[in-house]
Amino acid sequence: MTAGDSVAARAPAKINVHLAVGPLRPDGFHELRTVYLAVSLFDTVTVAPGSGLSLTVTGEGTGAATGAAAVPTDSRNLVWRAAELLARSAGVPADATIGIAKSIPAAAGLAGGSADAAAALVALDALWGTRASRADLTGLAAQLGSDVPFSLLGGIALGSGRGEQLSPVLARTPWHWVLGIAGEGLSTPAVYAELDRLRAAGRIPDGTELTPAERVIAALRSGPPAALAAGLCNDLQAPALALRPALRRALSAAADAGAAAVLVSGSGPTVAALAEDEAGAVRLAATLAGAGVFRTVRAVSGPVPGARLVG
Image (cartoon, rainbow, N blue to C red; front, side):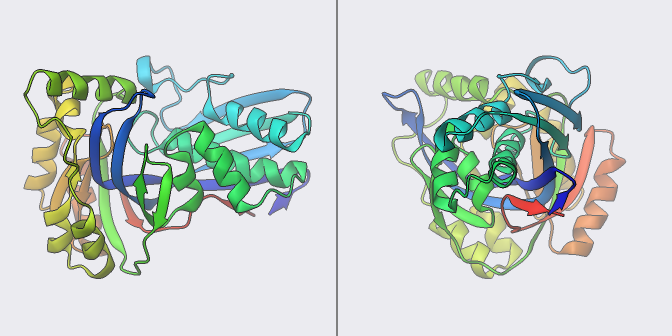
C-alpha cells in the first residue's frame, strides 16, 4: 500500500445506465434519478510529502487538448480542491506532491475528475494519517461534486438529489461493455444548459415526471442482457446529440457492430455499448477499433469497487 513515503489509490470510471433529469432547482442543480455502474477503467492518484500542494497529470486526455478536454494542474482541478478540503476538515497542513495517472478520458461523461477526487481523498487520508471514516470521506466527497460520492462507493447504486444521495444496489451479475470515445470532450454544464434550452423550446419532455429506475435495477440484479438493454435511459443523450451531431454516427456504428444496446454515457461524448458477454465485448471492441469512428475504444466490465488504496 505504500512505496517509500508515497501512497497510491485508484478509482473507477462510471456509466449511468439510467439517468433521468428533472427541472432546474432553485440551487442551480437538477433533480436526478440515476443508476450508477462502476466499471474496470481506473485512474490512479499517487501522493507523497511536499511543501504546499503541487499536481501533475499524465495519461489519457492530458496532452495539448483544447476546451473541455484540458486537465488543469492547479486549484481548478478537483483533486486540488479535495486536498484542501480534507486538510481543512482534519486540521492538518495541505502539504503534498500529487500525481494523477489517467486512463479515464477527460470530459468524456465517465466521471474521471470525480474518480480522481475520490482517489485523492483516500490516498491523502492515508498519507496524512487523518483517520477519516468512510462516512467522513463521503461527506467531503458530496461537497466536491455530485459524482464523487459514488466514485468512493463503487459497485452499483441508485443516486438521487443531484446524484450524491446513494442507495447501494446488490447485484452479482457481471456486465460487459465497450466504451467508444467519439471526438473531443463535452462540457457537462454545456450539455445541461442545452437540455434546459431544448425543454424550454418544447422539443423534449420537461422532466417533471422522472422515469422510474426500478426496471433497470431489476435487470442489473438478474439479467438477461436483453432486459438491461430495454431499460437503459439517458435524458442527457438528446442535448449531447444536439451539441455533437456526429455522435449519431457513433451510436449507429456500435449498434451495427452487434451491441445489445447503445447509449451516450452521462453527458458524453462516450458511447457505451452493451455486450452479451465477455467474448462479445472483445469482438465488439475489435470491430469498433477498426471502424474509424472512435478515437479511443475500451472493453470494460462492472460492477467494480470504488476508490481503494493500491500497493
